[in-house]
Image (cartoon, rainbow over all chains, first blue to last red; front, side, top):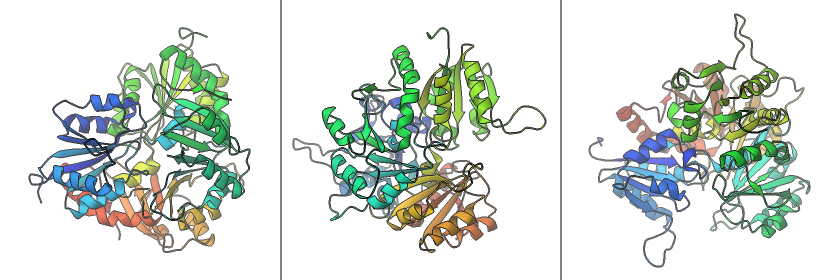
Length: 274
Length: 274
């Protein structure tokens, strides 16, 4: 198939939230796309920045009054159909398209249908959310490994695919654990780490709506964070960070907060507790 | 201290290589900075895109004929001094500033000196390098966790801070392991995984100079990758990816390659072996 016969689908990472944390390449693709099919959680300002002549599809939910979630199968069909018009299609995903965002499955489906695609990496919340809150996910003295998991697994799976024992060992050995989509199962997941032998005093931070104006950070420990998050009414989307690096935040927080006061940017965060 | 008395240091991620994988926010900061202090490995085109009036410092090595590596202490002093002029200083790092890039240590040093700083996240090579080569680091069916480590640890440490047993367990349990800076110690690290019980047939990919025009990908297994990398003359910088997701590359490679032929962009890569 030549370029004239089929279009291309770009699987593009939109970054953690703040539209300025989009890549230059993603910006160019958004400005020239025929169709943009985006997740519901993409920042409103980013959606509004797409040229008015571009066809926009929110694939987070189906059109109509019931507004059910679009199935993955329906998304694949939509991408194949729109690309075949032919068109340049941007499939815009929060964070990075390959980090718990089903970019791999979409690339496979496009390949099966003979549609060209390209993966355009983005800034992942797993790293950026703690970063903008003053917590480096690795540190020469405090963390030699970073593990990223999703707290909300495939509901069709009978058991957790995650080996919480191995995750607890990683953190105990000086690693950082970053949990995406982990608000709902927070008490369960923290209990699993503790049962697997992780010190209940291990520091934990939760960053809600990272890089948005109303970003909120709550800190505690494996033993206390579920209670703290409940008190602070933390709701999705939020990133949960487990490990010694959380303590660095106190050291750098003062200067980050000073900057925030001057610029109005949320480079640090309001601390609701602690 | 007020804004008029001291400057600000922005700890900025430059992304994996391709200047278009810089964030919009990083681009704006580079365009308005008084000083840019960058790593040696930042893409030449990105360095050339910095306005000519901006003072540029390559902190990868000291000026002068011997060209030794700048120490971390010297970098801290440079950042504090230049910011105090006062100036807007961009500290530009490859990938993300908090992923094995010592951004946390620099933030602490700036805080100690009373200098404002902000962490500006970037696209990390740990995720982007496999992504552009057609390998999603997570996949609903193949990988439920991603662990990022550095293969080249602090040479002053007597033993590895990494728990290779826990890393092997993570991969065996369906995780992906992404190793940054792992060319030199590749045979030793693969042997450590095998000794820790990881199946020697576990797929491995190495992506050299990801997102550059001369990007190269080599694939093999835990048992064979060191030999393959030697044959292909893989040299730093390269990302090593261990896990079942490496096999997805074959499925999506055809369409990525087709696109590359049309656009000339290195969205996929030349396969030197396999």
